[in-house]
Amino acid sequence: MSAVASARTAPPAGRSLWQDAARRLRANRAAMASLAVLVAMALACLVGPWLTGHPHDRAYRDYVRVPASLEAHPRAEALPEAVRRIAARMRASVVETGQSGEDLRVVLTAARPIDQRLLAYFERSDLFGPARLVASEEDGRRLVLSVPIERQRFLLGTDGNGRDLLTRTLMAGRVSLAIGLLATGVALVIGVTYGAVAGYAGGRIDMVMMRVVDVLYALPFIFLAILLVVFFGRNLVLMFIAVGAIEWLDMARIVRGQTLSIRRRDYVLAAEALGVPPGGVLRRHIVPNLLGPLIVYVTLLVPKVILLESFLSFLGLGVQEPMTSWGVLIADGARAIQGEPGLLAFPAAFLVTTLFALNFLGDGLRDALDPRER
Image (cartoon, rainbow, N blue to C red; front, side):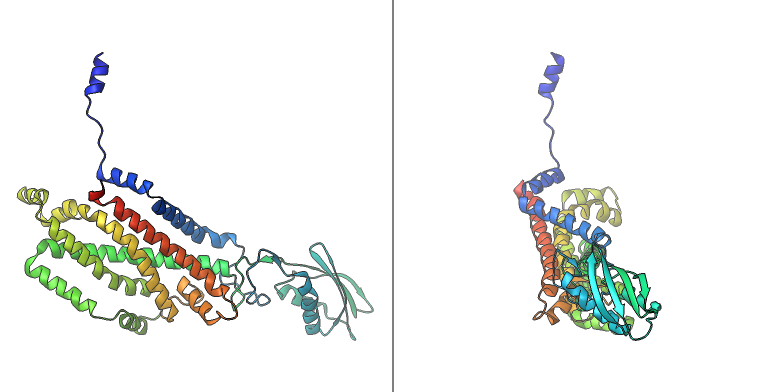
């Protein structure tokens, strides 16, 4: 009886703000679906290039601007013409071709003996493997060859240089997502520190610090990016500096406004009365209470940074070959949109899907972390 009575009198277990926010986020189907899409996209970009079977910088000269297809290349109708081109380079003519499984039987003839070292032309082709000599007749003027066929699949086709578009799109996702996350992290660290100090200090310190932000706001982003390119060259680190050096301004303003509303709360005043130094107040009481709005803003800042990187790469100021990004691929596809619309459509689809998922997730986090929704 005592155990039952104690169970009846035990106070009900409560939920913290984060537990309540997690419950509301799980109830938001659009946000959870977006989270699943983002996880799948990140895994595909991280692991996918190793599974496609094509290096991202490998150029297939015989497969330039191949359309997207599930079928393996080369097609059967393309083999005789490819053999004739190789035979012409060997100064020979094709008498007979016949396919047996994954091998091609080729009979070559010439007016003079054929140098067998020239059989390396088959191996240099993207369509065939090393040719094997089956028979040499008529003093070497007639050769019977067995040539293996190298099968290749290009699910999204190839670009103007013969590189697999799927592999390059996934590699571009690595770069774009890395820039989005790392530049956002830089903006988060600088913006939170700067805005929290300005809002908590107040007075003249706040005024001077925010006037500095206003001056930096007046600098055009493209002008700053061009200056960085002129002085430091084009590289991936420059992209982090250029984007992170601008995006922390919005973060600083948001954090400063939130800090101004928090610094006179009772728990902050109590900490100050107990002798907690300003750094401890910021670290223990102000910044932790800013996490809700900051998490929401970060999910909205990542797509903004990805778009900025894509815009810079589109202008030729961003990622350079042999690396690539979604912006670079979209710029290349825009130049060939009339002949090959897939070169633009596929990278743009990856970019748009990621941006939509990030925005839906940001909206879901905003609703979940809103105290008025409890």
